[in-house]
Image 1 (tube, one colour):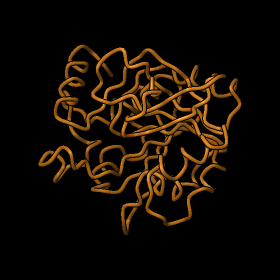
Image 2 (tube, helix red, strand yellow):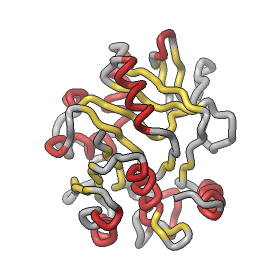
Image 3 (cartoon, one colour):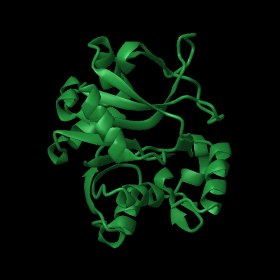
Image 4 (cartoon, helix red, strand yellow):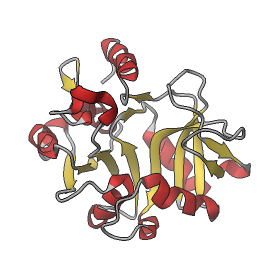
Length: 235
């Protein structure tokens, strides 16, 4: 299975930390955060990786290159003129993508068995499947997903205001390439706004439920939690 990592964001919530460094390159125990994501994929046999880069993306390319030093093969999709948002970045990367692929947030570490996630995607037979967390631990992210029967997503609300939201999106989605047709080429739009709602309306967004918490480094507090995980031997 091919993996696509969204690694082009500004990281504005982290203030001065990301003024001269892209969020995915923030160091943890001497290695950039993105290293831990790629290392996890490599250990699970996922070696075909596309990095969608934008803000200060040359730092990412300079460090990871073609990926051979980590045992993977990396291709790049570069937002050169303007940042297109996560949805626009995926649409731009379309020529590099397989018929279906794993999409990971570049600021989220989710240590699950991705080959097993792929098996669940095949079993459920929908155009897309997101991994959702049952939010047993406090991740700092509100519940934003509601499920109906057959593990089908019936509501996604990033603001987390609806009472039927029982799960949190965990930062990993398997998606058929044809779903990118919902996004006009060159449009600036988020992955969620461009694709999620259209798939949910059509009953084509399934969910894989995990009890494994995810680690988001979008705030200083969340960075500290991941730092402790690294000190315990993650990656």
